[in-house]
Amino acid sequence: MEFGNDDDKIKKALKLQKAKNRYMKAHLSIDDEKIFRMSSVEEIIDALIENLKIEYADILMPDQRMGMALPGVAESISPYFGPVEEKRKKDYEKKLQELEKAKFDYINTPGDTVSDFILRKEKETNLYGPDVYEPVGMGRDTYSNLRNNKNKFPKFETCVQLMFAFKIDIEEANLLLKLAGKAFSSKKSDKLVEYFIIHKDYDFLKLNDDLYNLTGKTIGCLR
Image (cartoon, rainbow, N blue to C red; front, top):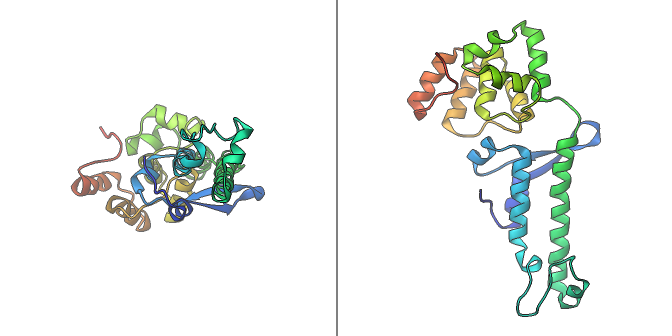
């Protein structure tokens, strides 16, 4: 997993926005759409933190020529830091704090989960168990883990199955993806799913036929 090394790319990759109960949630805009779709918000923030450490490696790693110790390990490092290094150190600490806060707030933000969404849609549609997961080729264990909140951040494709199972509109589809830490991308396959949802065409077999013709892949395991 690789991200850009400049400040602008990090800023584009993560934006903090206000959320329920004055907490913050992470809203991500990642250039690499595959990484964004297949990773959870926590995983992306962790990757950004690792990238940050690489970007500021010059002030974090020992300077063999000067015999420096790691920052925070020995106070003797301070005298070796000039104004430029001190500024970079403060920048690093500020960015690291923001990313760690984003992760903490995202994890601890109260509010709906994918499980809450499923339970609500079950009541609204009066669909339960096999009536939900079988028509879209989802396994019983997969659905059970989602329903019981054991899988908080399902894959994009799993979310698509839920969209078609409950026949939700585009607004609810975007909400479901947000709860899962995902989003529609500009990929043709995503645009195809969006088209079906916007036009309220919930023929899952037809969607898979079109996806196979477009990408050579399908969603779910239909018997």
